[in-house]
Length: 325
Image (tube, rainbow, N blue to C red; front, side, top):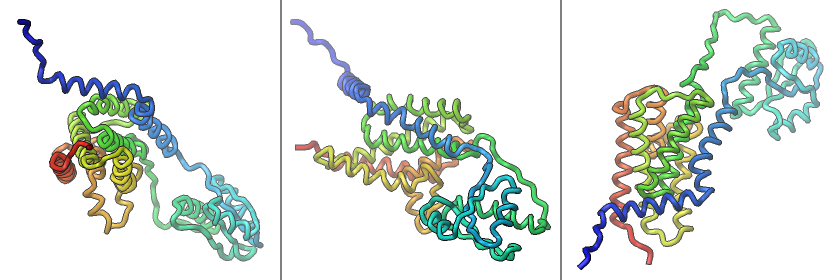
């Protein structure tokens, strides 16, 4: 009697992983979102917010008796571009977002000036500061307190250094939620390596902490979001339901967890909730290790949040999971 060939206990697992790898590589859109979308975001946002001196600011100047004197002063400043317009047009352009600020000069000798702007626009405050300084100096203002400007431009302190860890966290969230299973690790590792190398080559983004600590956070983040994804999909019957639930889970973290800007910008009352989000904890830990060179042991709060999310979601998913009928 011919003996049956022995089958390794790992054979079914290896078959599943191999199948998932083939499935992934045959979907160009998946390859784009996993590998090329984060790189595209690095290029676009890194270029848009690259360190550069503000060369000129622009404003609208309402046509009035003192407008000519103000225009002469601002043009001599060399870093202000002035457009003289009727006041009604200035108002219309400000409301339509075509200008950040318009100025009205009162009196032919510039007795006073009125600034019209939206204080919630960062650009408006910048224009006002530059223009007001030029006018005050022209009127004889001297600063009683000497000051010195020290411009911080070295790697680790720029917006791109803040952005890259957020993109890593965002990628781990998306990959973990949509790519449940161990095969995700085969895509995650080269994805993270590619993003780190690309960011260093193009924008000199450095990892100041331990690469081992960074790798640990990557594995932990993948585990946590895989657990959340498994829990979300555990009772869903259709792909449409899963898709809607995944988007519902990801949207708050996209907007609140500090991917593109600091979560500290939100009101203090919302901070306890924001700090409990797993992506917030992951992004904060990634930035601490990558940009500040901190130890993994200094991230106790963030690691606790991630561990609780991962364990609770995995056990809950295993408890309620069912195959679709």
